[in-house]
Image (cartoon, rainbow, N blue to C red; front, side, top):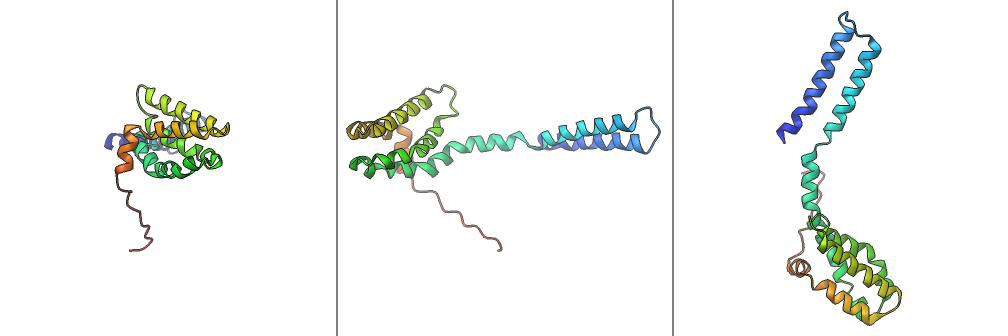
Amino acid sequence: MARGACLPAAVLLAAACTLHSAFLTFSCISRRETLQATSAVAALAASTLDSQPVRAEQEQDSPYRTLSNNLKIVLDLQEAVNSGDRKAIMAAEKDFKRVNGYWRLELDRTEYNYMTDLTDKIMDAAYQDKPDQVKELYAKYLKKKELQIAKALPPPPKKEFKLFR
């Protein structure tokens, strides 16, 4: 983290030195060239201020957030699947895809492709009004080991937002 924070500071220091030498002393570099160089340095600084370690941390956290946020919605479809409510199943397609995002960052995407194909088959069966096939595919979807473990966990704590202490 500390190494990533030093780079923008070094770039801004270089820009300040360039401005100082161009406007306060006589040099062979024209003001236009100095402004162009300074804007390039500023663009470089702006691109490095978006630090990669923060994004990497978010990427590591995202699979668990997708399960904690969307798995409950997919699990609550059990009643709709049993009753054959195809509209409710098709309305939850985004939630299925978000749960599938749990496997998105794996190196071999076999699990992700399997779950995505299973979701597509569930949606096709719901669209074609085949409730028995939807029940079978939904049960197959929920048999996944990771979903069984996540289903057994307690719900995440609710975050309380306090503006003032």
